[in-house]
Length: 189
Image 1 (cartoon, helix red, strand yellow):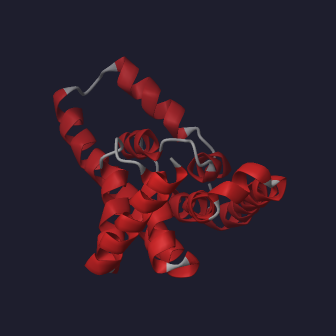
Image 2 (image 1 turned 135 degrees about the vertical axis):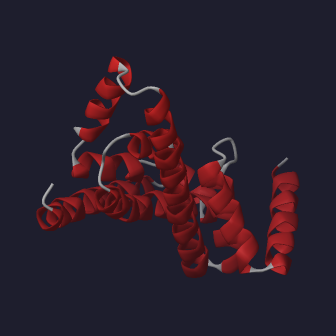
C-alpha cells in the first residue's frame, strides 16, 4: 500500500513538474474558488515537485489570490442581492456579526489549517468589512496555514511521529497572531 501511494505521488509530481510552475499555481488558486478540491494535496504536491521554498511561495500566493477572488466575487454578488433584498433583517444581522470579528481573530481563522477559507471569504465579501483589513489578515493568516500543509506534505511520516512538528505549527500561528496585533495598530481597526 505504501509503495502504491509513493508511486501515485511520483506520477503526480512528474506530471506537475512537466507542466511547469503555473500548473501548481492554478491548482491551489482554483481550490480557493472551488472548495471541494483538496488544498492540502495541492500544496503538498507543489512542495514535493518544486521544493520547499518555491512550492511554499507558489502555494501561498495562489491561495491568497484565490481567496481574494472569492471575496471580490462575493462582494459583487452581494451588491446585486442588496438591490433585490434591501431591508432583510437576517442579512443585516449576519453582516453585523461578521463586521464584529476582530482583525486578530480573522488572521487566526485564516491561519488555522482546518478552517475552510471559502465560507470566510464569502462572509467577508458579504459584510461591510474594509478590503484592506480583509487583505492584510488574509496575507498574514495564510502564511502559517500554507506552511502547515507544505510541511505535512513534505514530511508526512515525520509529522505523525515527531511532536516538534506540531510545536512548529503552533509557533507559526502564535507569530501570525502577534503580527496581526502589531499590524492592527496601523490599520486602526
